[in-house]
Image (cartoon, rainbow, N blue to C red; front, side, top):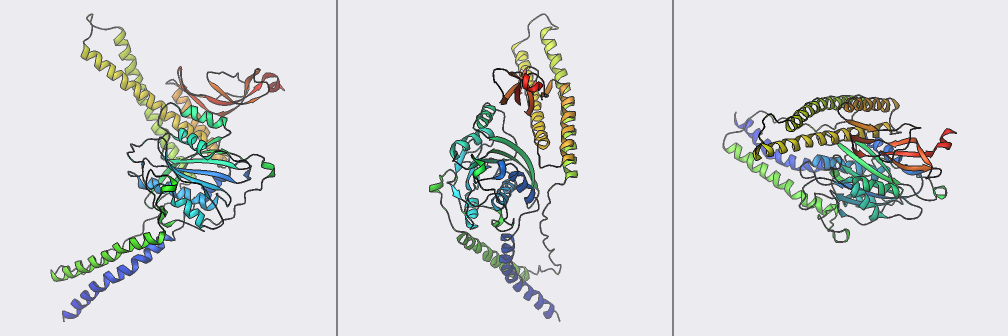
Length: 481
């Protein structure tokens, strides 16, 4: 009697690897046909609304930050999903695309790819995305300088707009040259836009900072409107990874490419090896008498996380505010310690001079305190820049924009007690060269001395001005009229 159930177990053991081997290609095919999630409409709307006047073809430069690809592959996948979405919805036939990888500089960039009605042109552009970090990378990024390098590489062609886009996991590291690069980009006619998107990946959400420099085409009136009619799911790359292999550091004309079919054939070998190994392991388990009747638990599919709704964004904002309050309390303790340290240094308790070791300890402690103060200022600026991007986002919900405005005002009132302040002049206030930067001047530049509108906030702490406020300046006579 025991032969029959034993025979069934043996039959199941022999059939299981075969069934598994035949099912794995089907699962791979399902992964190949996976569609992008719901937020694709939000991403498309954001970029579409920033293309000046919505007319004419554009030259796009799509750049990925590669410094964290090895440590955070999910964030690299999130960047690829954003680029895939724009290739399918916002970038139209007649546009051109350059894809690049950057950290502190543009270290790899493709040639010019012209987008056509054939989806293969989009597949070609996506396949050229970098698959790893810069050789010898130590991480870090300089977004503004990278965008300026891209502007020089892309150039400007008559009757065509330019869109320079860099995706990253955060803001640029502190360093000289960022403000200068932004100023030079604005002098070239670019408008700078920033937004943070929560991008669902297979395992979790990843927040991607998008910095876009947009310059509209010349002679807009004679250009045709941009017509967006492509379905979001018409073309999606397999598993959100580059289709063609790219060696890091090689130029576009030396990159080695390989068709997708060859890669799929090379991937098929491990599947049959796994099936054969499973067959051998099943036979060994029967021979050793270790077969169990308990069925293996079915593998559950990884959930696809939706985009964060407005309520979750508000909850995230509240968490940021709590963190800011905690930083403020810590900052107050640091400032009190610093005052006490300076007072003790100016009025030593002992008449004899301190030794070299004690003086070295004081210098080390003072440098540490100054570093903490500077780090807090950088954190505050990053938070307020994100809040300003939400406030100035015309496509965002009005209630959400008012919420971000109130949060930014509340944060500035709290931070002002510790010396940090926002530079946001109101219309009618005098133009101050040391605090304001005239981006737009109406009337005679020699007599324009009143602020008509604040276009971007600035920041300072005491006498240290981190960023000038961008303003529109007018003459006093024209303002009074």
